[in-house]
Length: 94
Image: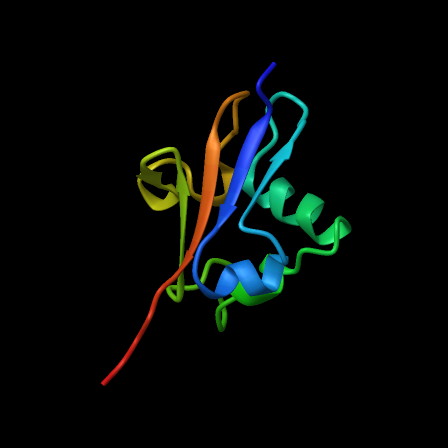
């Protein structure tokens, strides 16, 4: 069992306090549930991805392996042993 690798890029490294962590997770865990699990561990990424009127904000990208979750099943995407979940903030400028 490889577990799940969770990576935090850019400003999410500061939020998480780590760049990467390994987790053992139950089979069938969904992204939405991973966010709750991270909250229990004191990693408040869920707070940072809530958009106005929508849970999944356009100011963050969440990738599972090499695929952004919007092309999968969104926050209901199931995770598998060996997956890598990456949280990436979207930088806006002008």
